[in-house]
Image (tube, rainbow, N blue to C red; front, top):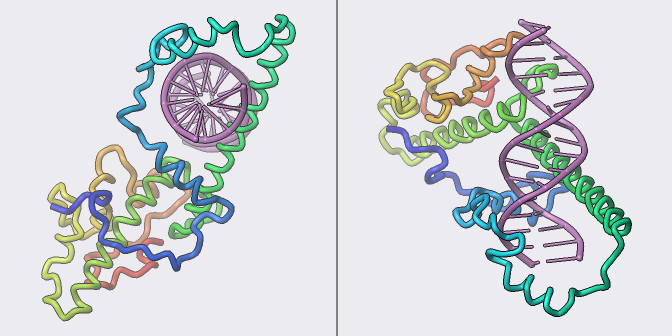
Length: 215
DNA sequence: TAGGCCATCTGGTCCT
DNA sequence: AGGACCAGATGGCCTA
């Protein structure tokens, strides 16, 4: 059974490589990482926050002191709310633009497609996932031959999908997750009438999985 | 016209 | 308090 591609990556990433997302700071990348679902961030786990719950104590304390600032008129409050909302919208728009820029950068390093067939967001993510998985497998196989180890006898089986797929076809070089509901490049192409599925790199030799195999 | 994709707005939640 | 992140809602655009 093939390892899950996200499980234990066999690839060592050095820092000599180019900044993956020009214009995107490391902090932003970290932010993306920290945005992954966290068990401590359960939506609604503080549902009673307004006037109670987690922050009730602090609010009560502030209220007892009579608030931090002088009460504002309805008009002023409404104006302030609108202003804050507008700023938040701007930030949100900006954030989404950054996210889209990162996605574009990702599209840029994936095996090229005809220009008019831009991958959708979900396709880009799934394709990238599968692509990385396939490259990892390629490196593994290359290592085998490089160090004079027995060449993997059954490269296709090694590369095959875990559903027992030693099909030796294009799909077999893609990760397990490409199976259910997910998108393998081949599937992606099949779903896209404008694109032609690549010629199957039928049972690529160890280390011989060329970049062009993904085209 | 229905369905898919996308951008934007919005309110809630968490963090600094 | 304010920023970041998230998910739901909404409307526009495009294609089969």
